[in-house]
Length: 185
Image (cartoon, rainbow, N blue to C red; front, side, top):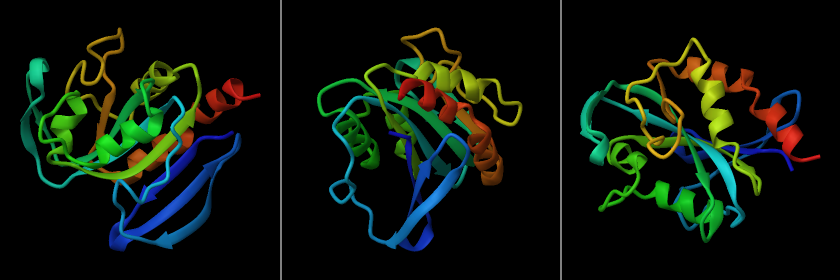
């Protein structure tokens, strides 16, 4: 199975993408009002990329990690879902801003809107490989060191660009899809 992408766009259009080893291609688009209960996600384990848009700059306390200035722009968050309910439970959690933040991303989600999602079903996590691929991109910046990565050696799991097209260009060039090919034979 290839990774699946959902890109939420203005006016409630939901664009479904399927990645192949060679490209990301649209599968279909529908008009919908997205809620956490209307999104059908698998309950298996996996890794994911969340795409977020922060409309205006904010200074945000991210729990024990500290206070960081988050500039307006576009963010990619790398995560994994290994617990009960798998991707379904974790993504549904992210779709609703949490009144009691638990993860670093919960603090940012109080201000930023989710604009898209790619997920990859796998018993083994590729979260750190994805973070490394994004870290290697000269087009993305780190605004909060160790964000989402306090339990690993990665410098961060959150990446920033002022421009959405930079995020799209970076994602389309990622080796994420090659990783998917090696994970699923």
